[in-house]
Amino acid sequence: MSYQDLYQRAVRDPEGFWREQAEKLPWHQTPRKILGKDDQDHYRWFAGGQLNISELALDRHVEAGRGDQAAIIYDSPATNSQSRLSFRELRDRVALLAGGLRDLGVAKGDRVVIYMPMVPEAVIAMLACARLGAIHSVVFGGFQPHELAVRIDDARPKVLLTASCGIEFSKVIPYKPLVDEAIRRSAEPPPRTVVLQRPECHADMDPERDLDWQDVVAKAKPADPVPVDATHPLYILYTSGTTGKPKGVVRDTGGYAVALNFSMKYVYNLDPGDVFWTASDVGWVVGHSYIVYGPLIYGCTTVVFEGKPVRTPDAGTFWRVIAEHQVKVFFTAPTAFRAVKKEDPEAKLLADYDISCLRAIYQAGERLDPPTYEWLKRITGLPVIDHWWQTETGWPIASNPMGIDPQPEKSGSATFPVPGYQVEVLDPKGQPVEAGTQGNLAIRLPLPPGCLPTLWNDPARFHSAYLERFPGYYDTSDGGFIDEDGYIFVMGRMDDVINVAGHRLSTGEMEELIGGHSAVAECAVVGLRDEMKGETPMGFVVLKNGADIDHATLEQDLVDIVRNEIGAFACLRQVAIVQKLPKTRSGKILRKSIRQLSLEKDVSVPSTIDDPSSLEEIRSAMDKAGLRQF
Ligand code: COA
Ligand code: AMP
Image (cartoon, rainbow, N blue to C red):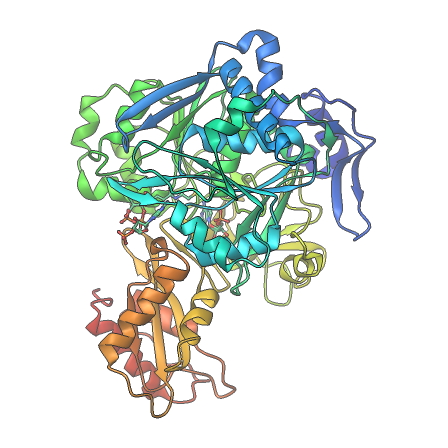
């Protein structure tokens, strides 16, 4: 079938299209209604349907004869170890942990926070929650206690699952002190913590609260899957918005299962039994969808990789893992390949490995810049597929339809909208613009199955953040254009969200933290161009009158605040103290002009500026920091 035919079918008859996709999965109860609305007037898919996603991902494959196939290949250069879990073994371990959680009082609808490194137990934990109908909320292991506490207080979990440590390159990072601190700061701490002790680091336990993972499963009886409604939340995944309070993106169960199952063929062109490797982290949406749920629901083997693109031990790691585990499709963020390219520009290490098993490389999380795209094409000769998505959507909005009708690639483009997504480019007044003109990327409602139905505890914010600005559309907050051939080019965020090495961060939150310092009158944090990480934040700070503090000390204090409150991966490494921030005459900070200074040699002074010398001051602060080398 041609791409256009399939796409148009989904536009003309969304219910027929998605009913057909839903029929590809076994349901305990088939949906009563394919597309409807809830009492908040939000679209909902597959109401009345009942299923259990851990059963879909595990039990049904065992029953269908896939029990001995590897479900997980764990490859950990961080610990110099490897292991495999078959679908049968994974089902049994998930059922036991689910039984253990049940013994701790976890039941359908309860929340469980998971703060784990990239080990198979992280996947087991997610699936064990899903088995009980409990709602998991995975928090990326790079977040500091403040962020973990904010998420705990919003989700109010019954149990928190963690490990004694994570490993970054060769550095062991004890997690338990971070968890203890988060619990101390939390207003609604979980009554129970279950800790996976890893050989690299022993966690001290609080006998009143902490339980050893092995003890919990040793005492447990396996739990059967609990069927839940299609609209039941499977997980909450917090993501950065424009303020300090993260948004709790809710993912429902039925729509997600159907969408992921569809995408495994349509987007990734995989078949059950193939090996799929997504080098990301279970703390991000990419990890949820394409390390855990997508591949396992579809019967693929997934690789859980605890390592880095470089220095674990070298820039040939990606090629080694692909060759050793016969990976058919590989997916990672462009920044990871930029790191490889920097260390091994001629890809000499690739010659050591036979990667003929690999059929395509997928990229997302940030814009795939044309130089990285061209380099990857040159060194591998393979299709290099840029595809665009967000935590909110849970699966790709735009991609090359590799599984049904591959299209010619265009450098810098994520190709065409995936069936179910009607993407349009709107001007600030909400009017569609001409082909080739930049504007706001918006998706006409209804969103397809799998996308967020609401925000946890905050339906009003769901409405104001996504639906209010362009009535009848979902506002992606991304900017870009669609060319004459219908190819989508995503150029970057239009709000105060930045992308640092594929990690989504809020400059608004950093401003709130920096602005909390007693010497700071006001500040602006702006994402500036970074060759390796895409963007890194830099802060510009105006001091309170009479603030008596050494500038170098203050700059370091502010860098430390972001590092200690959000996490080192936020990479706020520079803060400059200035007399004045560039503002319009009505008092709006000219963040765009600040950003442009790092991108262009000659930036024109906006006519609305209050005091042109303020921009000059920023220019010289950037020069001093070596940020303007054109
Ligand atoms: N736990 C604890 N700390 C973490 C962490 C984690 N899970 N992840 C990152 N950090 C820390 C690092 O240790 C580092 O700390 P340091 O400043 O003390 O050295 C800091 O955060 C910055 O880390 P990172 O952004 O990973 O930069 P790097 O220079 O160490 O490595 C890359 C560069 C390109 C190798 C790395 O950024 C990378 O692998 N990026 C790919 C990210 C990705 O897959 N994103 C996908 C999202 S879809
Ligand atoms: P996250 O929610 O962390 O997945 O981040 C989503 C954001 O990452 C999007 O809003 C985009 O700004 C950016 N992004 C993701 N994929 C792409 C892509 N293929 N091209 C450009 N930007 C992307």
